[in-house]
Structure formats: structure tokens, C-alpha cells
Length: 448
Image (cartoon, rainbow, N blue to C red; front, side, top):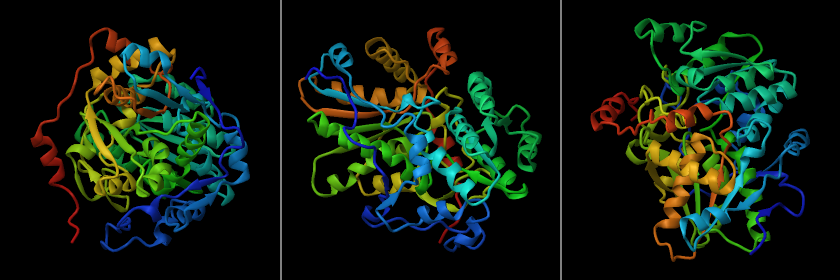
């Protein structure tokens, strides 16, 4: 095969794929943390537009993408599917390695696939402002771009350690007109309470979510937007996998293994879940979710009901979790520092349809540098986890001629400080003590 890059030979998909109806044994409903009963949609309508709530709970497998969203998608979609010939040669493997390049979006990651849709549905229902959190800044950048396109204001609570590590993510958000503050902050009651107990708190996605939720419920004409975990976010991201299926057909290939990095689960699920119907029909496809060893939600966490934020403001979700008050180490893959995993991904792990693995920080940066040298693209620290997972698959048996597809979820050109730290020998691997995980899991909500 001489061709390297594959694009769809017709229009991009016009509908998202909802995997929820196809999950064996289904999903359990979100619970109201006050009553421990299924959450009424009316309560969620205080922070989400009905258009997104309908998607969150939809029984339909295919949900049309609005024309206004498709028009913006066309700026960068369809994204390329690329054969990584030089990486294969460097590894000495007979495996074929393909990657779906989501780094071609305006902000360099997969996140606009959902940000544009969420901004559109909020705008359509008259919302004027969105509050959100961001870990590494990719989601905050995407939502800042999307809200600017639909005339909305945006405030982003950025996990403090990433706020300090990634200054140019802030610049991107500010360019699109968003307001960014480090979390925990002095702007919310919850943020102030955290800082009173620990003025040097590095922050976490759980804390930032609590702050953004408080902002949304206490501010006029403001809704909350979440960049991962929820069903409607994964729905929007399925355009990745739907395109990839078409492109693999054009390439005359079919993946044996699909790999993605996992924080909250959106980019991995976006690529993987459109292949679930094939797997359920008996096709031999392995779906491998790669998470950091410093935040091993699926591999060492518990499958249980838990809150999505530290303050306990969100509905309780049945998911793999390390506990909502878990404080992750400050690794540079900030987008993967989340205590929980999407209920959809967690249910697929429960049904043995997804294989979770964890990898260490240094081996991921090593993989990212090799990828840059061979394929010419510098990956984001999060994406390095997927690359590491693909390399492991390709080198388990160098003579096995399997086909690997992974999600290149974002480039790292705004993350060069992380590479500076790596080359300076300042990064280290983190292995969580079992006692720390047990302590965090001891505080799970008591659900009968």
C-alpha cells in the first residue's frame, strides 16, 4: 500500500450514533443525590438545554446533526485517517498502524466535536453564557471557540496545576473571548472553602466542575457545559469513529485493535463505540482504553455510583471511580486527571467489551517523541498515552500482521513546556499507594 492519508470520498456523517441502546444490560439511570432516586429531567434542565437532555436520554440509535453544526464541522472535518508507515518501520513490526488525526481542528484536539454542538443547542434555547471546567485546557479552548461562533459568553475554571503549566492554553481561550480563572478560585463559595483549607491546592477536575456548576446555578442566563463523561458528549464524538469506519473501508482495511487514551472517556469512546455493533455481531475487534497509572480509574477504581464533582453537586453516575474527592498527582496529561469514567465506557468495561490498561508518564513521553520523529507531528501529553498503547499492541509480537487504529486526539504544540520538563529529566512516574485509593473509595455515596 503506497497511500498514506485517507479522506471520506463523500460527505461527512450527518447523524451521530447513540450506543446506549446497544449496550448489553444497559445503563443505570443517574440518581438524585438528595433522594437516591432516578434524577428527574426537570432538575437537570436548570443547567442543560432540553436539546442536550433529550440526547442524554434518547433511545434512538441515530440522531441527526443540525445543519448549523455541520457547517462549522466542515472547517476541519472529515479529519484525516493516516497510515503510520515510518512508525511501523521504526518499531520493526508487521502490524499496520493507522491514526485518526483529530489534531487538525482549529484548537488542535477532538474537543470541538462536542463544544460546537453544546454551544449551538444552548444558543438555540436562548442561553447567553456558559460556565465550564477544563483540565489541560483543550476543552476550555474548544468551548471558547464554539461560544464565540454562536455569540455566547464563556467562563472557564481551569485546574490550577494546568493553569500554571500551560499558559498558552489560556491565551487561546482569551483570543476567543473567554474568561479564565485558576481553580480552586475566589469566585465561588466552594472554591473559597477549598482554599481556606489548603491555600496551595493544585486543583482537580472534580473541584473545577463544582465551581462551574455553582457559577451556572447562581448566574442569570447561564448554563453548564461538560467536556466528557456524559452520554451526549460521547454521542457528539462518535463522528470520529463513523468517519474512521468509512476511511478504513476506503483503505481496504479493517481494524483488529482500536486504541484511545482515557480521562473521562470521550475521545476513546468517540472512536471506539461506532464499532460496537460489529463486535456484538461477532467481529473480532479489541477495544483498548489507555489511562495513566497515576489516575487508574478503570484498572484500580470501583464500579459504583459516585458524584461527578468534589462538592457532590452533580447527579450520581454509575461508573468506574477512584472516589469524587480523589486528588490526582500533577502529571502533565491534565486531560486524563479525572476520578471517574464515562458511564458508557464503564458499562462497556463491565460487559468485557472494552479492555482497560494503564501506563506510566515517562513511557508515554518516550512514545510521543518517537511518534514525532517518525510521523512529524508532536502529540499532546494525553495523546501520548494512546500512542504508547498502540506501540505496545504492535510490539507484543513483531511478526503478527494485525491492524491497529488509534485516536490521535490532539497535537502538543501548546504543550511544549511538558516536553521541556521531560527532556530536562524533571518528570517522574507516579504509582498510587493502595491505601490512598482505599481512603478515597471509602467516601463513596451510600446507595442501596
